[in-house]
Length: 197
Image (cartoon, rainbow, N blue to C red; front, side, top):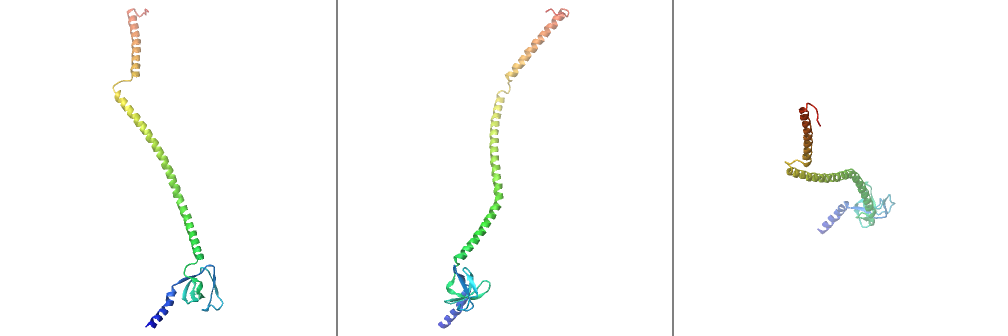
């Protein structure tokens, strides 16, 4: 029974290795061979950071498949499960470039609304200043109006002294001239049209 379990586990080991992804370690060129013990000459050179799929693996060698479907053997000691720094740096630089482009695009798209907002804020400030000035003028005019209303109610039935003085002066002058004419008219009528003065 134990033997059957061990055989079953050994049979399943290559299946669990099928989905494992590995990378060539940093600063290395690794030969891809056709022979399982890598005793032949490498038919392809793999660079550090090359992604590959492990088909099977023993202590010294691994049977691998490249993303383009090429199958071969490499030394297992140079395979790592974590991405090497070179690949991480390249990905980070690519992401940084993409984010920089997106930032530039977003800045360009926000430039017009920002200019519009600045213009509207300036217009709002000018309108606020104009409104404050108009309110001040309105307060002054309201105060003057209240003063005029108070004066009007105080002098509602009285005439201004200048008008009364002017009217009196005109009446006195008209009365004096009218009296002179009347006296002259009566004197000439009494003396036969002759002026005696």
